Image (cartoon, rainbow, N blue to C red; front, side):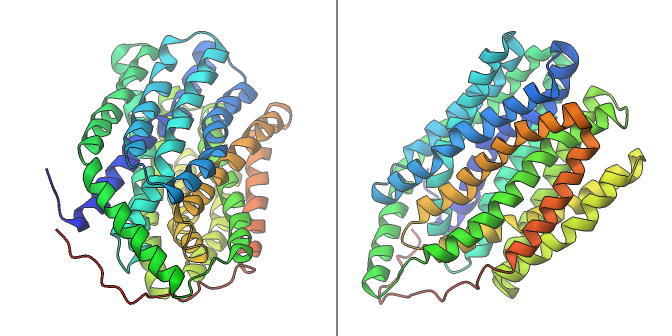
Length: 399
């Protein structure tokens, strides 16, 4: 089946959703693993490390490969692999087997994101903020659906084997995306021609500005991974909520983040990428501070919404701005801003877990507040987006 070009922004968004269902479910599964398998906070954070870091470290490599030779079928393979790993957690007793399974999901995600982000850029036309926000919100929605599916599956099965349900949407979407591989190949060829024409017209990469932005993205990623990993644990061990309710906190974070991601892309197109990034990071500081100070379940839960929205307001503008800084390397830019940045957050997660084991979970949240302040300050050193270079070539008409 062949769709209009504009429809593929939503198809890629759904692909992103299914690629991130497994990874999004992990924070909701951790309270069950802690309660039923007896793993420590540091060990739980180690699984987050396996998800965020191992695959994400190699994501820029896949991004660089995508810039040289497009392989759209890697998106389908990535979604399939991402559905295999975390869905097996309920059947594993060995911690290191769990670690390998989660890492497999991470590698699958790493395969999907560079080509996915690059393809989202190609089909979005001039509204890059909107296009990247649609792509990004797929990940947020996957993060929201994953915990709900995991808790539902575990509850219905009466055991952790209910994690198997996470494979269903990933496998279905992988086969659908593969059926569209020829169309994706056409978009990639069209995008490559436009890039080469723009390079001939004088388009250059600004790596210095890109790496300034990357520093901010790394800090934002550490905060995001820290929130998704440790806030459910705060609900479980500080606010004394059940495993299921603690796991469902991740859904609130993801749904709120999804709304903010859509809003952020549109605000970036209208008011500027830098202003949107800075606004989100500045608002994050007081919101996260209230969550850290509160011991009321209702107030804390209510404040999760603006906290997640502030954090994610900066997400899609950061990805789109990175692509604007290095327009000749869209896949690599996506691999770094969405992949390597996540690995940095994953690397920091076990360290934060050790802090939590020794000094308590609230200390971890205070560290995240400090990182939010640092990210807000660092965002003022990132320059504005450069003007686009338009080559004298007509854009291919939608089929």
